[in-house]
Image (spheres, rainbow, N blue to C red):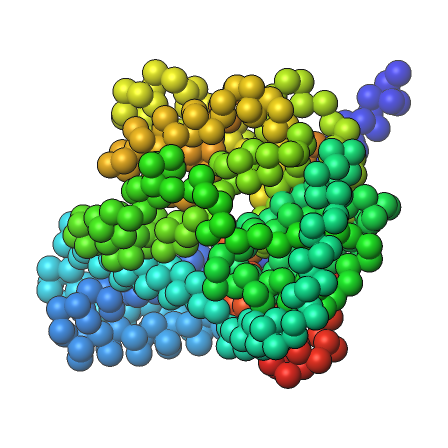
Length: 498
């Protein structure tokens, strides 16, 4: 027992010494730096203080003194650098002159009232100025990013024009599509897999359809219902008539044909026709420009953005449907979505409340009594962009009526400001079934996403301004989208789409 205790007591100091040496090595700390009499520490402290005084001297327009301080800082830094290169500590003799000269300059700075209190005040003012500059730059960056995201690339504009021309020139194309739609029973067959996309972007919509088709185990059972606007209607019909998508059925409509879509039934249409609302979204002129640019995106004036709340009216014959945004790419078979039990809920969606940012209190105005009375501020947010909707339950619970109620209450924009997610959170509150997160992976249009999460994801969402069809798209995520674009297509070549 004695021998064991002897060895333990003898080894323990060795272990502590070894750990100490490893820590010193990892932090690049020398004994000289730790010494209270270290001339290197003295020089380093002087340099730090002198740098602060240089900034204050420049602020006071004392450029000569600022130059003298900067010159002495360089001299001291050269001494420290030379000592580091030769791996030997500075001696008192080597550093005495530099320390004395710097001390004189620092004393002179104090005589010029560059004391601590003054320095703190000046530094605070400097920090405040820098923060104001940063906020200004951030606002401009956000504004220009928003403009870039909203701009239609010339190549996509060209594609739309070429397709519109082709549609009106080719009468056979029009006749075949009309005959096909009249006889296609698949559009109303509830045993099939129905998807909808509301978009004015032909190329983006094509990627959604193509990626779904190529990753589907039974593409002949997939039906896509596309809704666009009058401007893009002919081009959208031409593209999906000219191209085959692996047996997938594709139908194109325009929302202007929906007779029920009028201001007397749809509150948001009435609001969108209001000049104050238009001013708010286009310029923010009615609040002195205080509203951030992201809250004033004119895309919120588009009815295509609000059609998601009228899916049962758009597709009266359907019972279940998957809604997809046009900025997604599908990389797994999605047929499993149609067999998920929503437990009598209306909306199946992936929750986004892993962080506090994505809880209800971030999207809604909890200073308003209506919001406080009806919604838990810590309730989980969820994502639009890949949603399973039970349209039977939707109609039974009059979910569109719930949406209308909250839209009418928000006529003055005091309940929420941004987009369609906040009214969605209100409308489907208590009616949303959480889905497995692998069904819908977000963030590819604005942030870094774990590659393993991307690999497992069924639907990848480029939410954010950096869309994959734009020059500002995130380069590392573009290949995931590009693989579903046929860049060799004659029209794509003619319009230089790349």
